[in-house]
Image (cartoon, rainbow, N blue to C red; front, side, top):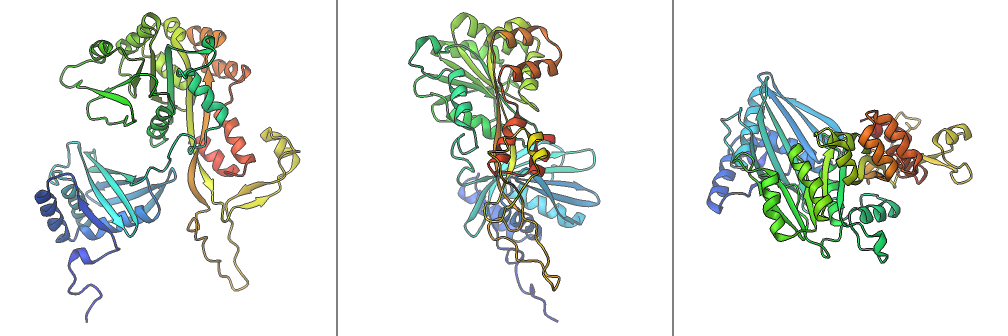
Length: 446
């Protein structure tokens, strides 16, 4: 009895996904593609990537063991489980992905990195693949980069104008009043770990600085490729080859930069040099760190070991971002919250008549659910936005950073001085109908 796939090549099976090898020369790419199209591993590879593409996933996580493989896709910051694979299918699928990226399929221990592309109709992604051995097998992480950035600027990320203007001022924006001009210091950009958006806010925050009026030099570990921002010159530091950040900063000084940009501050010695540059040479540094909020970001940098009073003297501020999912504008549902609930949220009752929640489908009299929303495919959410916390350092906060070990005490002081927390920013999103109460709670607890 004939089957639907009888007589088809492996590449003709499965969903409509076109996989391409892109990082070698034409001959090597063509050889890799032919090899993969003849492997049955291309079918599960296309199935996993099709789910990622149609759901606009940002990452794919594949964990391989002797029992098989589990796969997940990250959509708007949430992980969704895909069907498991048997050991043979999993092994062939990973081999296809590695071959397309010109990696070694037989090496399941060493860390390997590469790239290939996946396209389905008008949807296309560059797939940055990282593979590494684990105690139970091998882990594959695919970071899916769209042809066009998800966000064009930090404004698209949802930052309020008031916070953006303050960020620009604290990082050296030109001010008509020279007394308000900030030429030196250290500013921290932070976001949670594990896909919390640090790379995104880092890139777009730098894009909002005046890189065309001042000279920016970025120093980052070789191979990191974290800072690709126009008019920011990048110097790679080959730490494996014996280079150090202080040595490279000393060389960079010959170019007389105005601003140092470091996505990673590796040690006390590097932070010490940045503080000296701020104090002695009137230079600014913009750095980043993963943290749960702005105060923890300050604490993480502080614990590198530089004298606390020296660090506090140099610190201008920190901007922290958390991301939450946006309600689908096409299907979100309004509801009237009780006055007590509005009061608990700290919202003015006269300004908030309704809040919104994601669409709750209701069965008809025949027990059938309505067709899912075409805009969000029934998820109730579409895309993400940022909740921005900005802490501006004044003399009181600098004194606390220099002497206060209790982070909650610093948080309370920051809010007393008018710095809004991420939660307060999120409540503004609630009032505007951008997100839901449940999503805000999830985002703040993650």
